[in-house]
Length: 240
Image 1 (tube, rainbow, N blue to C red):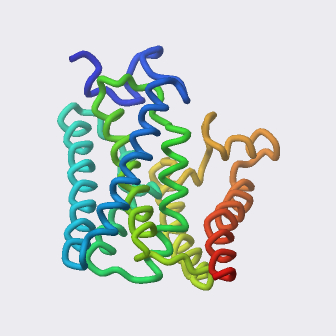
Image 2 (cartoon, rainbow, N blue to C red; image 1 turned 60 degrees about the horizontal axis):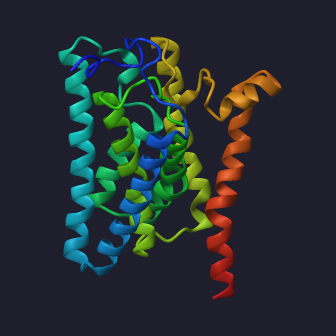
């Protein structure tokens, strides 16, 4: 199958999809349906089955990641840019740890950072240059659906309980990861976590055009995300 093992770096122009085209909307619909089904399944499960489901999600994430690595390495398209150092890739490790050893802090981090990060990727896919008959196209959609669905499922199952008091520690964890990733970007010439630049189609690109630096968008977007993710649960808790 031509172009199946190409990447955004090697694929000819004009073969991809448009943001919010029919295929894109179908993937978003699949994401919503998968999240609802996962929540319903998790709510009905006892503690033993819940652990099996969590580990199952982690296993699917690793299978998805190994599939990506195989396709890249076997066909000579592996680059430093594909190291697992983007925010979503790092969350594969965090979800795996959480699946075996859940904690309020890590759960709140996955809720606060993991859900918006994966959903932003699904809403503004950076792999739009790829056609449907491509392994990275399928990997990119499925892995981000799993990454977002895991904390959504646990929140819907009332296992992750949003707690604004944990926000300083969540942001500290994010900063703790961002500092070494920034240094790696300088060393390898990569753009992990979009710390070096924002491409057109990325929400951070708007701040690049308005203010001359996409980095100025991080405080604005983070503040907006924290408000959206934690104000509604806080108000609901106050009313209850």
